Amino acid sequence: MYGAPGEMNVTPLKNGGSKEVGQVVRWVRPLRGEVLKVPGVLAKPLTTLASKLLRPRSAARLALATENDPRIDRVWQQTRPSLRLAAVRDSAFYTWRFQQAPADKQPIYLVLEHDQPVGACVIERIDDRIQRLVDVLAPPDHWRTCLLAASEHCLETTPAEMVEIKLLERDSAHRPMHRSLFVERGKKPFLVMIPAERGDERLLDPERWFYTSADSDLDDHS
Image 1 (cartoon, rainbow, N blue to C red):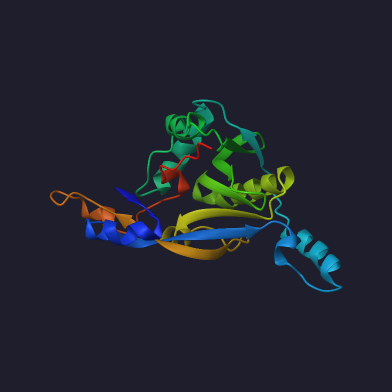
Image 2 (cartoon, helix red, strand yellow; image 1 turned 90 degrees about the horizontal axis):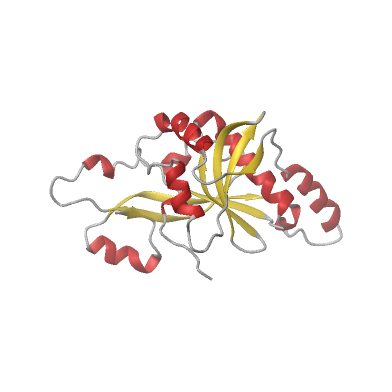
């Protein structure tokens, strides 16, 4: 059992045998100058300038995935060698986890560059201000492409001021978060519970894990 529980559950889970294995970081990228809340008479020109500087630009585009989309399997096969410890993220997982979820509020997108799939992502609207990247699946050399393409999509299709993604701290250190203008906004403990007997100690190694909100079992039925 693994994940980043709510604050009230951390102590009971630790008392029950879970071990803290690193921290989950909430990464946030501003999309519009309005998020800076510039005061005074210079608010409008500075906000306009900030919007231009913050605008994500990518040569890739997003396209909705189909059920059991074979292009996701291609991306998974390209990504799998770079992940040491992660849930399987093939087309069957994406179909079960998102397309068949009761709330149906987390669409799956392919990231296409020159019409070829270089990644996949899942986007969820949190509210009018924030869009969440629930998951990003891509080989290391295409992560920045996916982050920028997803951010640009959120900017152009929603009124959102920010986009966020949750990743393990150790894992995100190897990804182009700052280069893609994502900044840290809070952390939560990442807990792992393994069997008392014959438990694989490698599951407690924080350097191995890849984790996103896709690993959560939460689904909004409202």
